[in-house]
Length: 106
Image 1 (cartoon, rainbow, N blue to C red):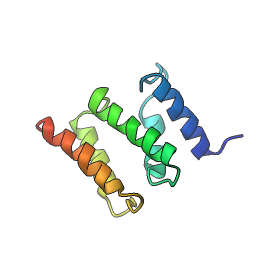
Image 2: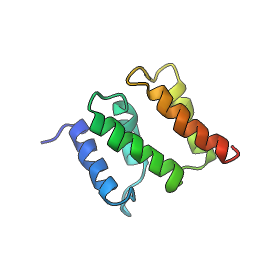
Image 3: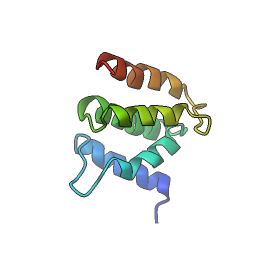
Image 4: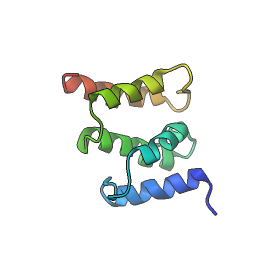
């Protein structure tokens, strides 16, 4: 039996292999809490190649989130209750989420 971290990794690998598309019975919300939980993980494959690239694809390419959803996610990661202390995750957010919001006139 896999733990939640390993299950997330397997799920994100499958999603990546499917060009970041979700199946009909899946929603981004099925994965977001765990993605936020493990975005600071020391496993660079999980952190960089799966979680961060999935976020980038879902935000920039698939546009799975509207303006209000993006702002809610941004507020979540900037809140005092959310830790951004691993591997310059703040840089990732600044370069990707902030730039996306600004470049699309939000």
